Image (tube, rainbow, N blue to C red; front, top):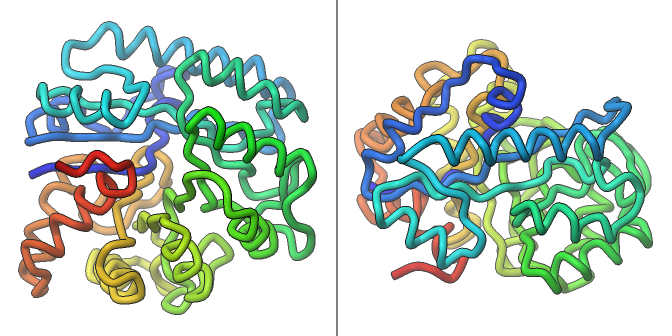
Length: 300
């Protein structure tokens, strides 16, 4: 099987020398694996630019030391790497606070291999308002940042935005837009989840919603189950004609994981579980890889 996973926080753990759950060995043993590795910046980070540069450099060094992974600089490059039995590693910024209020700093990060950006984390920054903000939308600097991302071919991730910022980005009609790790708010009322309107509008804009198994995103009760995660996948699949749903595992970014959904091996096993629930082979292929490959315009 092939897997395209739109979000993990493994870069943070590797850069801080913390044990991590992502398995390069398992991922590289599959028929193809494309993984977006996020460079996370906390909203309270005192030196965001410097910290992000350091983490990305350390991650580059780590990937270079392995023979089962490579950094991918274009979607076609990602497909080529995955076809060789290596983990195609796409780098992303999670929170453009690290640009330190200057949208043109994206050029510097682009030269370091960044190919996707999330404008905010959970709070407000110079570009937009995060999901914890009740008011406020996309800012003028955010418009310029999206223009530049569009020019460079950098993906724009809407997962952490509040509703107004989300709508403002959609209404710009620019950029390659996706949600890297969110679930359905109709099933679980969490500010990180997307409403039906948001899901539909993002899909109609050519985007994809990559569903996240973080327990607070998929269940109002604890512990959350993998069946509830499957329910979110089914729900978003139905809203997007089966073509706008993918996987955003958030591996290494979840403190208390959903049952049996912690590691890369668990994600592989989950495909069998979906089959047991009645998902067709075509639906499973779309969820795990084909929809995201289609989004990147690299579906063979």
